[in-house]
Each structure stands twice: as structure tokens, then as C-alpha cells.
Length: 377
Image (tube, rainbow, N blue to C red; front, side, top):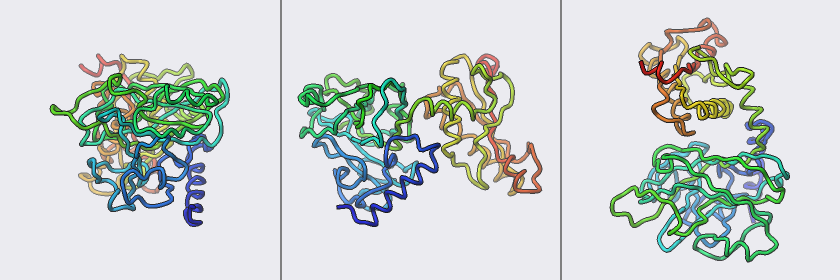
């Protein structure tokens, strides 16, 4: 039984999620594993410790949280990975000897609606001690909760023994970023719902011989262990409305004017900070999706500060702000050869520095989109 204090904590967390996320469109409860019944003390206790999540098989998925010494963040038994969305994240094997597998399962806050389009996304980072990286991530929606006592891959042979359950399966491949052991990389896809989807399971549903792999070390014996965080299932129309309406410089036809300096509308930083918030990430997602389609274009990012502080420090801070934006676009999948960034400190204000309102406008990030050849001259 969950203690009352923990239940109240989980409820408060969900309410805060709704306040931060526009209209609370994410159908995943506890998307970044911050609500828990117990601070993790041992390996393989994800099923018991994390609220609103479960494991569909006997595989021993792990839960890491900053509250724990044994299962803490950023350092743990498989390497070092800072949490980027709070203090917790999950850890699981997508590939291991003898077809061993681990999975995560979430019950959606509401069933998906038939013929409606949805976007599924989550962040992954390959653990440093992994010897392999997988090239696809599996996503399985089901009508009923899955509870199958196996430790190997959750194959169709196992799934279709449950004759009353209904499934929607998809797989997401993600360029060369599947092998990143430092950054959090966002994996995402979209699909049209059948109307039977109430639970979602993440993992690798193939056995070892069918799994597409990348070997990260010469003498590879261990598996592919990934940290996973910030899981989202959103109606696609709501995602598009939020993103497209808040992107600076976007024309009615969905294009951007080239060679023109534009300012991110949702990327005004707090004083002395360079952390990105959700509205800014949504704006950058829409920008990335445009650049993904227009592969002959490149983007330049320029960071700025207000006039408070020394010139040296402001130059450093402005570079960190530009770098934060650039790294997020790289996480989403933009090629390194298509992006560059720089900082200008407080040397180029667009408003007065005599009051907070003006200084806030000066703490900005600008971008210019141009043709690749033009920028490479």
C-alpha cells in the first residue's frame, strides 16, 4: 500500500504537470519518474517503487533517483548520467546475452481515440558501460495490461496467447544518436490510433539474432543498457497548434524567411540562467521539423545577455545560451554540419537595460536560416 504522504505527493506532481504542460495533453502519468512509492535501494525494483508504471515481464527494470545512495543520480552501477527532467529516470536492457530483455509499461490517463493522430516521444541515453547500442526502439500499445512471466524478448508468440488483448506495434530508428553516452536524445514518432490503446510498453521486442546493433567496444560481451526519461503521448493536433503558433518568423505557408535575424519567442532566459523550459523546447521542435524537411538549409544561433555583470562573464553566459539551443536541436537529430552557434554577451541590446522588462528582452537567443552554400562561403 502506498503511504498517504506519497499518494499526496503523486497527486501534487500530476497537478503540477498539468500546469506546466499546455492543457495537460500528455497522457502519460508520472512521465519523468518523479512520483515514487519508495526511494530505490536495490536493482530491479522499478515495478515496486515507481508510481503509475509497471513491468510487463519478469525482467528486472531499474529505477534511479537522486534521493538514493545505492540507486542515485548521476552516478550508478552502469556509468554517470545526470537527470535532465527532475531527479529520476529508468534504466533497462534493450539487448543482453541469451535474449534477456527488460521493459517499461504505463497505463494512459485515457484510451486513445480511434482515427486520431498521436505523437509518442521519450528521451534515451546509452549507459557508458554498454558494449552495444540498438538501432531501433520498440513501442507497443495494448488494450489490456500485459503480465507475462518471461525474462526473454516479449515476442508476438507470447503476446497473441492473450487472445482478448489487442495490440498496436511500431518501431523507431534514430540515425547515429542511438549510441550517445553523454546527452539525452529524444526519440519520437507519430501514428493513427485504432481506439483500443490503453497501455504502452517500451523496449526491444526482437531476439538477439533479429536485433540491429552497433558495437561500441572491440571485445563486446555485455548488453545495451539505456537510461530513459520524459515519456510523452500527445494528440498530434494539440502538439502542432502549440508549436506552430509560437514559432518566431514562421510564414503562413510554413516556411521561414531566409537570411533574416529572428528571435525565439519563448526563449527569454531568467537572470544568470541558460536552462531551456518546455515552451522553448516546443518552439525548437517545430523549427527542427521544418529544417528536417528542408535539408539544403543551415541555422546559425546567436546568444545574448543583458548588461549586468562583467563583459567576460556575459560573453561566457551568452555562449552557454546559444549552446543550449544548439545542443537541443542536435538532440532532436539535426546534423552537426547544419548548425553553428556563438555568443555576443551584452554588446547587442534590443531594449533598454534600465529596467527588468528591457533586460529580459535582451536575454534572448536569435537565429538565422540560410542556404548551406551561402553559410559555407
